[in-house]
Length: 229
Image 1: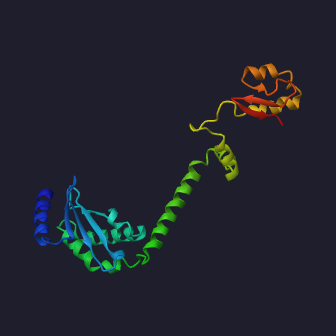
Image 2: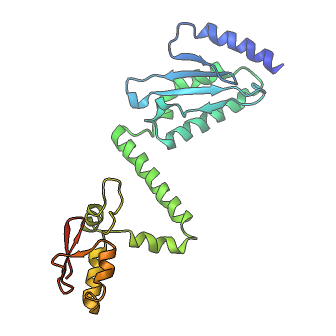
């Protein structure tokens, strides 16, 4: 029975809105229709989508305002419009109501959009700020049970100079070259007094005294001179 009523209503809708560019039947799993509510003020224009459930019209249709065309409409206004249309639909259960709902929205568009911000830029900033706050709150909640993560994040907060120093130590592959910390090895040996005794070991890993003297504090590595402090 519901299917027969739906087929009849589809034919009526096509007949009524024939030639109306604002009306469009959408190909979906369920019957769906869109109507563009026009206004001279672009911020007061939106796309209404009505989707029929299998039991429609014994059940209310779905009211959808999630189309990209409605990106300028605030979430608060969208929720308000949907709630008011659903309230209007309650009195028409069991009867064809799509045409009635579309016309009701057209007639009451100004009231439905009364709370819509006039400044589109302010609206974008408002939505963006809201989304960022939600994301930060979610991160805080997700990380609340990870006590070690906060400490790790603090350690990673490096200054620009520290970050540049780390970057300068990387090669073209983003890796530190072999021997990048060998100056530290020489420094350690010079401070511990073992630089002379470990000259043979330094030579075995490619560090060769510049003048062959165990007391010399300059070393060759890949033709570069490394000087122990």
